Amino acid sequence: MKLTRRKFVSSIALGFALQSALSAIAQGTGRRPRVLLRSSWKTDNIGDIAHTPGLLAILEQHVPEAEITLLPSLPYGVADGVAEMLLRRFPRLNIIREQAGIARAFSECDFFLHGSGPSLVAHKDVALWRDTTGKPYGVAGITMVDAPEHLNASIIDLLNGARFVYFRDGPSLKLAEMSGVRCPIMAFGPDAAFAVDLRDEARAAAFMARNGLEPGRFLVCIPAHRRTPRWLVPRSEAGFDPAIQSLNDKYKDRDHAPHREAIVRVVREIGMKVLVCAEQVTEIALGKEVLVDPLPDDVRERVVFREDFWLTDEALSVFVRSAGLFGNEMHSPIMCIGNGIPAVIGRWNTQTTKGFMWRDIGLDEWLFDFEDEHALSLAERRRCTSQGPRGCPGKGRNGAHQSARHIRSDDARP
Image (tube, rainbow, N blue to C red; front, side, top):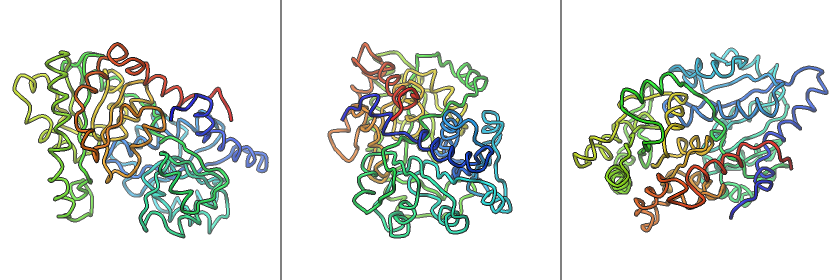
């Protein structure tokens, strides 16, 4: 279903819900409202990192008077340079660095905001806030998964007690409604990563110069595992899981053969370069194995392989200089669309229903469900996307900019 601009903005009124909740608090206290933001789940994925600056940008736009304190997943939720990156963009941000700071934040803050994620990730913290403070809370841009650990009576009770809950994909909203969630404000609301505006122009320019990437003359391709092998993530305590390894091995060639075909056609027929990079740290080796190494020699020499991990600001600064992005991850495409860059995604069931948000924002033609055999022929659609509006009327950068305006607009209130 295509959404009109006004209906779309009305359905994602997170900013206005926050304004309503916090203005009442400010009137009652006579001071600036204080928000405790629970986000920053981990640092091994530029998409998980992106949830936080995206939501901070939304807060900055709609409730600029609010004092924001970030409660990350401790001890590593803002490690690896992430805290410094956030503070460069949001210098007024308070970040809790150790457990001792949580009790003080619970006492001083007026509103608890749970950020975007694959579920009600921090449900224990939401419950602790509710039970110990009795103060209001809300949830912004989550997916619901029909599994006991993610959707049970306790979590439904928490959602029912929220001032608002926004779900980042239509199926999640429907599942919540069918499961008995009856929050006063329940609606579709995009993942906060759409609002990310971080930049590291110097690093991006240097990387592109070293690798001969010209603005508008390259595409980005990102691989993904069916399920993340957490045991390969630095500092992870997860043990080797043979079932996950077997699943990934079974599908990794099938899931990336269409992308290899697209790379070949983009290089040979359009003459563009392709940058293969990772959204999540374990995908670096995967990209080399399934996307780069199998390519014909004449194509491989036109492919740039990013051999190390990067932070969200540098990655997005490169993405916005590209002609578009395609791959099997979710949040790099989200950041592209939010910044007016075309992005095509492949998805499968182990990624939950989050990929279906592309349908919710009118980009169903750029969504390929890899559970459907017909979706595996992608090259022609990718080639169309790379050519922009001339090759695919109504889409390309024009379509991406239109979707970005829907997501980011603030001039139509419900």
